[in-house]
Image 1 (tube, rainbow, N blue to C red):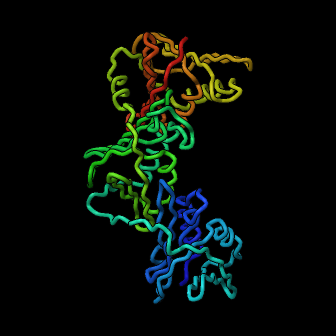
Image 2: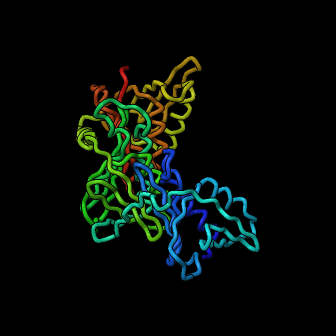
Image 3: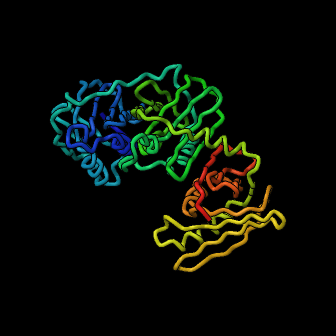
Length: 382
């Protein structure tokens, strides 16, 4: 069976996203050779990846269905080391697994246990699946996932949701939330739901890996009581749902947004981003730098100050300020992360200087937005 080399390399990279770190057969990639082409399968505790060769990447041949377990890194290295002139490879499963290219061949030593590989059940795409633009979903995940705590990090009892993205798919929109003790994030995409509603918690690292595996412009998504499924014409991924109590992010953000006493600032993103980048240079570890922000309504100037053993910064930037003159203190590294995640020309900032318990709200300040991202940053005592 002949396969386009570049397409097979890409499919192998996709399947590798699902391989387990355990020292068993799930740390390998399953190669299935069938009449319809070749499928690659990777599987771990949280994710299953099945990727198929696109229909135009093979020459149809009558062949006996066979399964092989291979070391994914070894096969990747082998394909990379083939001469650049090789554009097509041929897999022969008649006697073991043989890879032919041009006038040469390489027999791969496969691993025992292919018949014992815990093959997942591939859920068929049906009317319950919601169709969304792949780039929109990637944009939403990128805008929120950086807030989540890393999967391997320890958290307090009942705080497992901090490692996750909360994904809400409703009739008119899709929302994704994330939180850590100091930063909340929310991303909204107005969307006509052509499938079933669902609310799930998924590890942020898992879905961040998964969304980069798809080749089509559109992805179909759905969730049942155990898994969230993502699919296109060539790739199928299931992500295990995390059984944890969702954090009340949505209620917190709504409470801040509806507070009419907040000072509101609209500022060009490139101006405040440049200032915050310079301020964060004062921090030796780039994790903590106290920033004092002052808003002056009369002059429409935003004053930003910071100080450390490395030096100090005091900059004024032009802004449109609505509300009371106010000043707040916060960790500049959090605002830097948020500004880097925002895809906009103008940034809107809201805060309540009279109540340090109310987080600072940061969001897209443009008139027209594709995905509406909102962040809440915890304040520090002045």
